[in-house]
Image 1: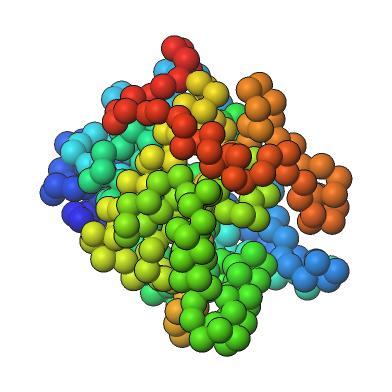
Image 2: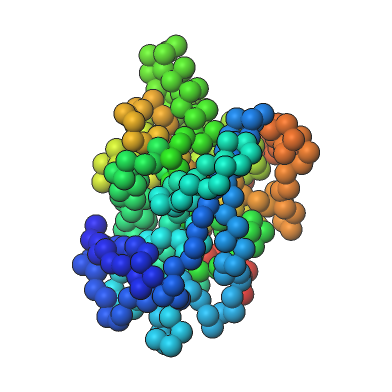
Length: 369
């Protein structure tokens, strides 16, 4: 992995990554030379036991710009700068111009519900210079690079001494609120362990204490033995519709060997992880012949306060189409009680996904989508 760190004109950090040495052939741009006055705050929800982020400055962020102005494409006209320079690189990571959390968040005025500064970090991850591509269109080498980039960002953020949990994710499709179509994701780094990751760690630790082995090891063994929910098994990694899937066609990517962080994987495991991820994304697009709207999340162990080897490293994809033309909406029981209702058994969903035939490089979606 090659990289180059630079500063943008407004002071934000930018790192360019490549499978080959990075070359920059233009000035480092920024849509504005003036930094956004970000003053995020957090308030404690006493009944749910979780923090709520407030970032009023985000109301002015870019929203579905016309194709001729793509802020994630390399700058072509210096008079209309975007976020990225021209050059030879594969992936770019830069500080979000409209962050929900910052490492330098000022202390707010005293307020209700344990008001405090919104400390953390928000980064944008540009997957490719191709504005019309998909995450699934990356080559095997580029996908392995992306996994290494996520690992590198996690290590760097943990190194600040202020971060306890790092979540990389991708929102794909206007159905899930995407405001920029260029293939990209985000990273949110928290100064605390969020509820989902905290609960995963607690239950994984309890399993290890009770059985003397990682939960992920038992999960992989059981799914490989059953076979009915496995979509693709690469030996070192596999994709599966978990037996407890909350969304129709929910898909997990897991390493065959238990790991807690992406940085724990070997080079061979990383490439296998990337292959099952690419395969899953292509199958989801091919399932109904349209681009599948989804939320993809990368779950890693907490950082910055000792190791947590019991935590199960994995990637989850929540597809938002439950049938052709039918979106999965969160119902009252799901929003109000946290109890999900799934219209499809995982075994049936896995069978349908295995039946999707997607050749390498094939998009298998309707023209114009």
